Image (cartoon, rainbow, N blue to C red; front, side):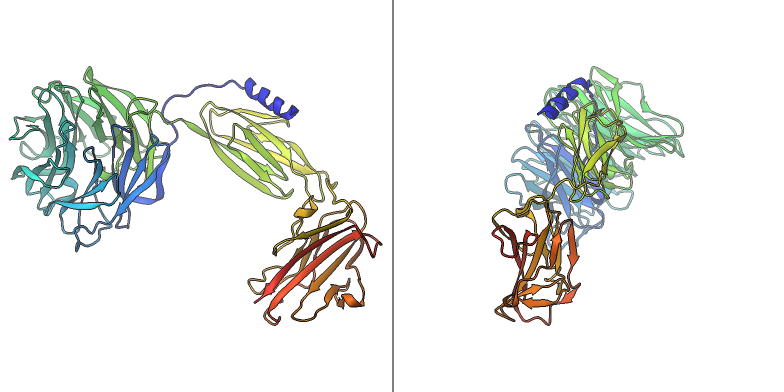
Length: 639
């Protein structure tokens, strides 16, 4: 009780500090590398979804988080050989994922081996995916994109077909959750970059926004913006957004979820070498007019900065959009930078935050970071899903994820280190061994460590002291404001801390066979007669007993009814004698630790099949007919 009170008081003396911001990267999937991925979320529950393909595998996997990203679980998998007869693909370049509210389900878009644009429907109530062919193509794989009108559920998809530069552009829509598709745009493509971007924009009249980088105006590519009434018909606005001699490409469009929405179009500009810059244009009135200024998000010399993703929040009304872009510094590494803007201050991207704990994979575009929201989380704004450099795994971070630091513990010798709060329970039960443990604690969290010696059979363990981020030999107090490393050293005094008492009365214990002896301060937990790997064909009779509080005699017996109805007694010279010829101790007047292998390894194949029982009896020394004894019995079987 006194130790408990001291520990609690010590905890109260550690000042805590709060930490707010992006936390430790949360693993979604870490079993390999990914070809491509995409994300979406349920605006009612905050459930988040990630669809991806592992490198070299034909399956598409869908993971789900129902706790705002704290944990992720596999929801479903399906093959890329849809429709039936299509060959499996292990090299997808693009996946698009859409959460559809009515009926609740996920649509996963990809291009199959025949060049068809396929949508796999994953109903969220039965988890049995089924496919729909959106178009027979051939679809230019990296060209397709999707969006949805949240008011009426209409889904839009765009793509190109033909050669690597594309021959035609298409937009189709579906009013029945992707069951059937109707044509909206089908026109000749003038060439340019294949990546296109679609976004839905709310307002007094819903709109579909569409951008791409083409050669329709000039070479190199320039950015074109279209606005279509969501309800149907041709575009009502077409605007050229860029005018320069440099290549502008990979545009992304997003609109705030408010009436007559503000619209952002972000795009990359290539100045050559490590000189890719990120710029944007803004329309305050759903694309009718455009701010004449071309704004810059980031354009540092010697560093590439390019768009990864931009999304609005599905909850209405909401004037904010979140964006994540890549900052690729040849000297400092590759970061994913999250930021946000609003219709009230559209040219100012605020709250910039590096989200990754390790370098991210910046390119190609379909393995670059993605914005994802989770309504109901403890902080506003969206999170980010990303892959580490080399396409390694998938990870998640968000403003509501706690920052964490790792506490690493090393235990030298025989002892235990226990933390308050829970997390560290690190034990080494051998004076010559070293054990390591670790646990992640929230940033700023106070942690107290208590060291407890663990005594051995023939030694008393003593706590020597702390080293690393703690010192001395009292309770170790830490504040987790960085990664910490602590070592606890224990030493042996060499005096047995316990001994089995001399037997009092009859004490009979039966146990299942063990390969090696088990010693314990409790006689009932000892398993002193071991048989080795009999199941593997080798018998090795071993005896192990802890010290006793006085001198003892030890008797060993073998009962093999398939050989003899009598019990064989093992004599000190390891010869055998029948019990009917007299009782002879194996060890007389023993005192200390007893460890011995009787005959070494013996092949059991020559033994007759049957059960062989083993007995070990301990009495006070010199008492040949005792009423006080320990009697342990076990057995082995020869098949």
